[in-house]
Length: 388
Image (cartoon, rainbow, N blue to C red; front, side, top):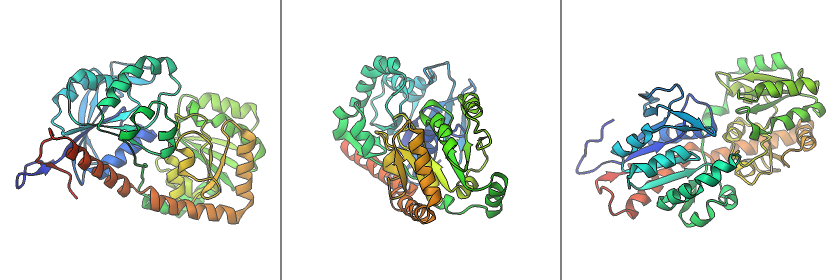
C-alpha cells in the first residue's frame, strides 16, 4: 500500500473495526468484505477484527490488510479482545469506521482515548441478549453521540430501531450491495447435477442455523409442500433441526447440506428461495440479494427490519407473517403452482438488484460520506483525500 503524498495530497486512511472477517461466514462479514474490497480503489483500508483461533496475526485477504486480534473470551456471543484498545490507539487512520453490534469493540474505542472522526455502520440492535443490551446501553449511546455519521442499511430499520431515534439527524441510509453479475450465471452442469440428485421442484434456504432464521417454521411448512427443501449452511441448531424434521416425518423432503464451496449453482437450481426469519436480528438478509440476482423469487417475512424492504411483496416474491408455517406453505405453493408469477417475480428481483443494490453504488455512497466527514471536521489532515 502506497500512501506517499503526491502534490501534497495522499489517500484517506480508514480503519474498519468489525467482529469477524471472512472466511468466517455471516451477513455482516460478507458485507464488510464487499465494502472494503470496493473501497480500496478509493481509500487505504485496514481491517481489525477478532481472531477465532486465540492468536493475533496480520494478513492480507484479497489485497485488504486484516489484523485479527486474539480473543480473551466470549460474552453473549461477543468476542472480547483487549488488544483492540492498543490497536485503536496505535492506528494511523484518518477515520475509524466501526461495525455494530459489537460491544467489546465499542468499549475498546471508548477506552482507547482516541478522538478521530468516527463513522458507525449500525447493522442491528442487540435483540436477544436483553440483559447485555441494558447494561451496554449507556456506553452505546455515548459512542453514538461521538459518531459524525451512522450508516443504516434500510429505511425500515432506521424507523424501527429505538436506539437510533435520538441520532436520526446523523443517520444515512446506504443499502448493502452485491456484485450481481457474479450470480447471473452459473455452471449449467452443476445446476443440472443438483436437480438430478434432488429432483424438482426445489426450495432453497441459505444461512447460519441460528434461532432468528425461523427454520423450525419452514420445516413444519414442508409438511404441506410437494417439493424438496435444501438448507445450505451450518450452526448450533443443526442437530435440533434435523431431529425436528425426523419427528415431523419430512426428513426425505428437508436436506441439510451444510456449507457448500459455491452456493451459486444452488440458487440457479432453486424454484423458490425462502428467508423465514422471525426476529429483527435479521436486519437485512443479504442472501435475498444473492437469490434475487440469480432470478429466483423470494418468500420472506413481515419483520420490522430491512427484510421486506429488500424483496417486495407481490413484486419480487411474497411476504408472510413470521412464525406462521401455514402462511409459508401457502406462499411457496402459490409460486410453485404459477410458473408465470415465478418468472415475473424472478425477473423483477434481478432488475431490483441491478438498479438498487449494486456494490458499486454502495461503495460510492460510502466514499461520498467519507468526503462529507472530512469536510465537516476541520481537525482532519487536509492532505487526505478520497479518490474519484
